[in-house]
Image 1 (cartoon, one colour):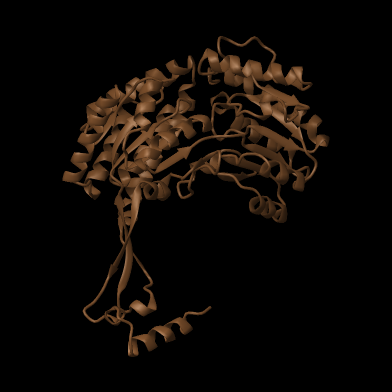
Image 2: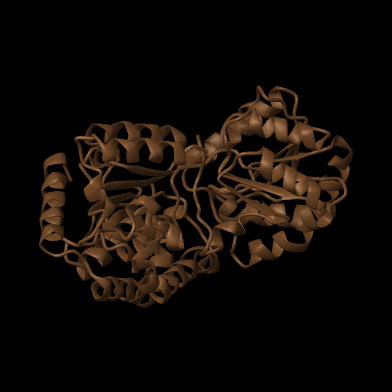
Amino acid sequence: MDRSELEQLLFRQKQAFKREVPGYERRIEALRKLSSILEEHQEELIHAVARDFGWRSHDETLLLEIYPLQDEIRHAIKNLKSWMKSRRVSGSWFLYPAKAFYQYQPKGCVGIMGAWNYQLMLCLSPMIDALAAGNHILLKPSEIAPHSAGLLKRLLNANFDEAYVSCVTGDADTARNFSALGFDHLFFTGSTTTGKKVMEAAAPNLTPVTLELGGKSPAIIHPSYSVERAVKRILTGKLFNAGQTCVAPDYLMCPESLNTQIEEQARNFMQQHFQELLDAGQYTWIINDKHYERLQSLLKDAEEKGAKLVPLWDSEPEDRQFFPYLIFGVQEDMRIMQEEIFGPLLPVLNIESLSGWISYVESNPRPLALYYFDSNKKRIRRMLQETNSGGVTINDTIYHLAQHNLPFGGNGDSGMGHYHGFDGFETFSKKKAVMKQYSFAPTDFLRPPFTGVKKTLLRKLGSFLKA
């Protein structure tokens, strides 16, 4: 779809929004319709995702995309009436008896640009929030996962009026044209590099943007914590979708004294679980040859610069299967410590103390997530207070994003803005301030000219307001 066709589609959506802003009933109807689409076409959607990857487990797509989306819809339907209510706030004393409140209104027509690694989740989750907030939506899935993108286009466009919800597909040129449209809000999920381009394209229209990006999310193990438990939970988070997850643990920090235990526990975990995972056909392939070759080049670069590569599985992989590695002896000049990995490679960076871990995190771009394994409340509190990240899970990985009542989003290089639950509703809404004044109001005495009694009152007001 070229630029002029996109502009015409957005124009029709804006005209429709002006004619009728979606109210509570229409929003609920749209959310239920989306739930029905997911239920009725579940197997078709799962199969499309598997085709995009070459292979992806049926159950993994259910667990990580279909079920969370249905739960998000259920949560939104349950809470929408309370989210939409006006909220009274305390009025300023000198404006008494005026009342003050705020109410949420939809921003208008919003654009959503999804990402290939969780095409269903990363397209439809922000769409759920935008529908709940009462917006019209133009959706652009990632062209890197064409089968799921095409299916989303067919299902959404067959079930929604195009002036309300419409899905478009296309290549990188379409994506560039899409991000330059005059939306009332633009939501993008993807890499930091592309996020900068999206923000630049949106700037001439003064379009507010939410950027859900990525980065290098650290997992940190304090030596007092169970290494066995920590490694199990870190590898679990790392191996979902073969590491192709924006909040996957990207690298591990710990004292050097833990290296032997980490390797032993990682091998034990793999021996106990990985063969069963392979036999059940539940290990996802790397999305395409380009990304597969990128992971190989990361390993080669690290080895050439002195790192020790520890393969955690010895059998021959099929096609684009990429088996997990631990990488010890990593240095900051290695590409694996400079780029987001997005695969089943886990570098181990040896830093000895809490102060050192905090210093390293804070001297690098702010991560999307941070995972800290410790039971000491004082150290946990210090880690939370002295590091900046999009979100944190203590003593586990990735599951903070499944909390409906917590915002999800990045910070700095890992993104801006947030969504999920009420926070997503708020992101796609304008929080409008309202004051209601009465027949008798002190403001009637606050108009110029300020002479006589008014001047005296003004000076006394200034004295009273001093802190």
